Length: 575
Image (cartoon, rainbow, N blue to C red; front, side):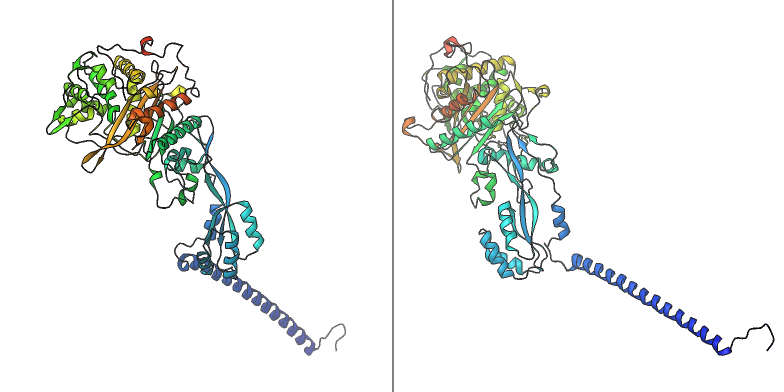
């Protein structure tokens, strides 16, 4: 061995190298194991996601809603409010809770069905049990529950039973505005009226819809219509009040009606859903004599004292036109109007001619549906061939059927200094009133207003008279067509008018469907005995609400009122 050198035994050096190799292998094995675990977790997660996608996309049955969809429903905005012109609430939305179940989580379907139907008796037990037995992850059980019912169900502690925040449309005034507002379905989508027409806007929840309606005027109109229908044993009725200067509809009612809060419980009886004012088309009877006389004056025949022989029926082929109260002497144009002579009206129309008559009706919009902010509007009915018989019969309101709203619009234009407005259910800014368009001259308008005033002051519309107020109008009694003939004594009666007649602001229409003759009407069922008195009561109650100032004392009788027109023959009263 040399001095200063260190010798390591060969066996000791090889053992140290073996230990290092063993440690390295352990490290590699550990890393490999961790990598396998990580890959397994990743693959398992991937398989779960794929399985979920397959379940949702391919295996889920039709109509089954996903929880993601359910969660999305909770984020919906409230449907916006609907207000009257004075800010009174007509329709609003309330927060409610809807009940649903995940049938996969329900442990005992029978127990759950038993307990739920005890809390909610309106549930059908068999249907509820079937839903809880299904393999669906989302099934509706009940909609729009109160907080009290929700608390009772929570206390049951049933697995798989859940709640979703929901919204229910509420109409505080029930039937009062039914045909105007319409209603919504269980999912809060509009199905009629304003609710349907403005569905998207209301769902946005940004601003309320402000209507032209006045809740006070609406209440009076519906109240008097209900009383009149009951008194005259009628099958229905309708009414409308409109601002002739702006076209704003202040009130509109059609009876029978319905409660939009309970529309799902109406059953098979759907007559109440029909809006007679906008959707119905009727032969209006003598209310058309306002239009016929305005046309006569506009055609250059301005002499109100020109006489027509009305003593004999007017013949059209094999038909004869007669007057309900025959006159035994010729009548002037003014008397034909106030006495409501069909013969006289027909002869006036023949003098004007069918071409002018048809053109005037077109100008008034009688041949097209009237546009309004609700979808329930009907089509007018009229003959395609305008014969001589059409010219005669339409002069006194037969042979053409229009909606009451179309008639109100036309008469409003005639009395409003000849300017006709588009009717609207939305509140109009006083600074943005539509200019409208002219349908008759101011001179014709003034003359017609005087004649309408005379009908109420001394003619067949006397029962529409209101002390201190200048009410004018015209009654109309039209037999109802059954099959191919008109049934005598079965009538639709109406009163179309305006007030105050010296400066008209409001138009009024009242219609009574098949009124009966009663003791108080002495066996008559014509418009002067039913529609006219209803109109008078409505005007008497709403005039103070609308700030219509009564005439000065002593101005109520025609001889002292500037609206009076002297006639060349004595007036013959009657109804």
